[in-house]
Amino acid sequence: MGPECVFTLGCRASELFIFSEVFPIANAVHQINEEILDKEVRLIGDQGEQLGIMSIEQALDIAAERDMDLVKIAPGSNPPVCKIMDYGKYRFEQTKREKEAKKNQRVIEIKEIRMSPGIDTNDFNTKLKNALKFLGDGDRVKVSVRFRGREMAHTEIGAVLLKDFAAQCSGIANLDKAPKLEGRNMSMFLSPKPAAPAKKPARPKQPKAEAEVKPEA
Image 1 (cartoon, helix red, strand yellow):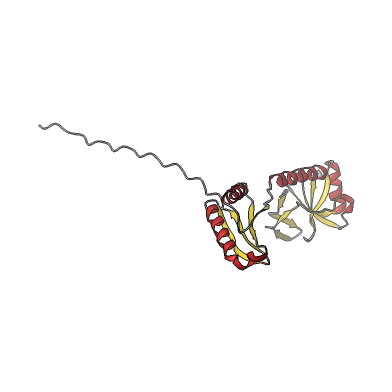
Image 2 (cartoon, rainbow, N blue to C red; image 1 turned 135 degrees about the horizontal axis):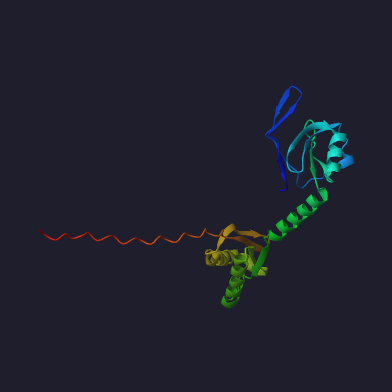
């Protein structure tokens, strides 16, 4: 989120205006300088100071004196709110922040593991190993069994196979969608379990002080 401007108090003639509204200026297309056609605006300085309500000409003059831009940040207010700022610098920093945010985002992919009802133990373990790796990387996994020809008469074999597969992944995965037959494919979805918060180390126990033995008189 970009800079925010907060109004606290403003006065005009004999009227008193109290504001508690926050005006975000990020992720928006702004009117700047001569694009602003309003007759008067409420002006905020480049340091956040309240400069009051004035004509658009006065606001433009102040922005020009400071060698900055006049940017309309709250067009829905009455009068609209404008802020003096270096708009080019603001847009550069905004774009940089958006790029950083995208860089830190991770897209969760759905990986697919396919098996046949007659899969042998070695192949099953290889596919299980791959699924555990995908889940460990934070991806969801779709596990499917495809039935061919007469195998459709024994779909319960696929259900048992998928349940066994899910059970062996249960340490790090949740079963999102139970096995379901759709056409010739029976599928289920697994998703990685959320990481458990780290436990605080236990505080060492303090040894109990031994009772002082007083010599008999």
